[in-house]
Length: 498
Image 1 (cartoon, rainbow, N blue to C red):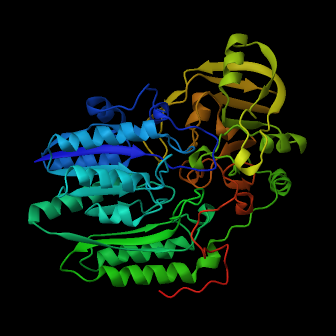
Image 2 (cartoon, one colour):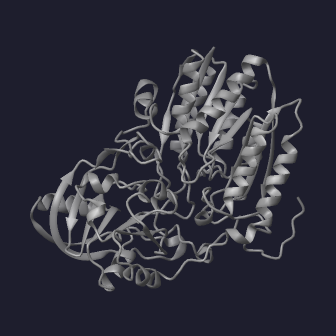
Image 3 (cartoon, one colour):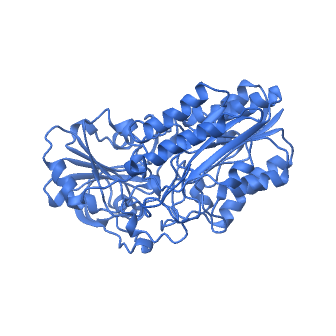
C-alpha cells in the first residue's frame, strides 16, 4: 500500500492586512519555501501536530508513504492564488502518480483569492484526479466545515481540545480510522450539521463551560456506540464568507445509524447554550486598573485584540501604552512583530541606547484602525536568531524561527521584538531572550486561549485586555456582508428547529 501524506495549514482572517503568499507557508520554521519529503518529516514529524499523528499510524502499518508538501503558516489575510495553486498542485500530482489512500492535515478555515473554501476545493481537486481514492482529513477545532469537504472525503476528525493539546492524537485518530476501514473493507459515511451560530472564540475553550459538556457529549457518543469518530467544530468567526458556523460531525459505517442521532443531540445542546457563547470584554483601561490592584506577581496580561493566532499583526502597542500610562513597571513583553525596529536596533548594537518607535507599522483599513506604535528610548540588551523549540503543551516539539530578534529594555518594560509573528503558547520566547517570567511583575502577551496551556503554571493572575486589532472581540467593528442570515448572535430572535 502507498499513501500520500500532506499538510496545508492556514486559518484565514479575511479582515487581516497581512498578505499570505507562498513564503508565508515556510517562514515561521525558517525556510524559503514549504518543505517536502524528508525535510518535512524532520521539521514536523515529531511535533504535536496532526501531520505527525498521520505519520505515526502510516508507520505502524508499515506502508509506503510520500510527503509531497507540508505547508504551514501562521494565521493572516487571504491566501493568494499562486500560493494556493502551488500547494494543491504538489498534493494532486502526488496522487496522480499513484497511491492507495490520502492522509491530510488541514485547518478548515482557509480562504483564498478565488475560493471561500480552500480545503473543500483541494479535496474536490484530489477526487477529480482520483475519483475513488480514500481520503482522511484531520481538521482544526476552529474549522468552518462545508458540504464540499464532507462530500469529498471518507473520514474527518477534529481537535477535541482548545487550547489544542491533542493535535497529534487527532492525526492518529483520523489515519487509524481510515486504515482500519480499508483493512476490514468497511465503507464509511459522514453525518454533518452546521448551526447558524457565530461562537465567540473566547468562549470556545473545551476545559470550561459552555463548550465542555458539548464536546464531552460528542466523545461519549463515540465511546458508547459504533460511531468511529465524532467532532465538534467551534468555527472561526473572523471570515466574511457564507459558511461560518459551529458544526457537529460523525463518521460511521454505512451500516450504522447512530450518527444522525448523536449529531442532533450535540447540536441541540449547543443551540440551547447559544447565549452562553456571547463574550463581553472589559474596556482596556478597566482591565489594566484591575491588574494594577493585584500584588501577587507575576500577573499575566493577555491582549486578545491583536493576536497572530487569529490573524493579527502583533504590533499594536495600545495595551503596553495603557500599562505605562497607569504606572505599571517590571513588565516583560513578547513578541512584538516589527522587522524595521529589529533592523535599527541591530545596527545600534548590544549595550547601546536608541530612541525609536516600536510597533504600529500595520494599519487595518477593514476596521478603520490606524496602527499604534510606542515611541521609546532604551538599551539593546540582547540580539538572537529567534529560533527555539516549543516545550509548552501546544505544538510541543516544533522548532520555531521568528527571524532576528532583539530584547529592548525601555526601563519600565523589556520588549522582545521579532521579524516574524507568533502566538506565544508558553514562556519559551521570554526564556530565549533570557527573561525570567517569575522575576517579572507583569507579563504582556497577545493571545486568546492557547496561552493557558503553557502560562498557567507560571502565574496565578490572568487579566484579559481588549486591545484594538483585527481580532477584536467587538464584532460590530467588522463589516460582515456575506454571512448567511439569520445568524446568531446578530439575530437573537431567530428560531431554529433541530
